[in-house]
Amino acid sequence: GAVVSQHPSRVICKSGTSVKIECRSLDFQATTMFWYRQFPKQSLMLMATSNEGSKATYEQGVEKDKFLINHASLTLSTLTVTSAHPEDSSFYICSARVWGFRGTGELFFGEGSRLTVL
Amino acid sequence: AQTVTQSQPEMSVQEAETVTLSCTYDTSESDYYLFWYKQPPSRQMILVIRQEAYKQQNATENRFSVNFQKAAKSFSLKISDSQLGDAAMYFCAYVNQAGTALIFGKGTTLSVSS
Image (spheres, rainbow over the protein chains, first blue to last red):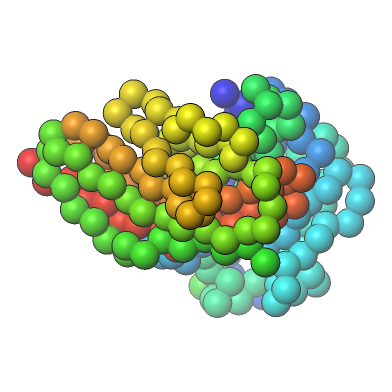
């Protein structure tokens, strides 16, 4: 199947600093990628849809100035958590939908990134 | 708006037994995709099985099968011959045909005992 790689898998930062998480599609081009946030033992919450070459679409309640998304190429989307605070500590997951891959519209997920803000 | 409901927060099964996880959804669309994803302790999301709404035949993947009832908007997952490695959180997911709506259920934590 298609491969989505996410980096870093774990990051610890000080309060007030910014952290960048990368999401790469390794063997396919992804015009659209999705960013999720997941709290322990809870479901995935869609934060935003990242569109290559255009602005991301944020879900209601997600601060676009805090969670900056850039999708500069067909294989890379980045999520930057700006001025991070302890309440931003969470597990962040990216995914990409492969159009035309066996015609199923399957979502492929990155490995996830655990952010801890001290 | 579309919704996905998993009414069983936790389920348990003995090794080699069969367990069914339930999922219901609501949509006004006729074409869409339904998925079951597994999230083990590693937290990597793994696709278990997919179903295209236009297909009447229930999808099967080895020990995993679904009971897709389109009229009832029901999409349950049956795991046969359960194994210890099946222990994980299972998410039911709905994706519309355009790919603009991706909705996950709240998940069901499955434990498997020997």
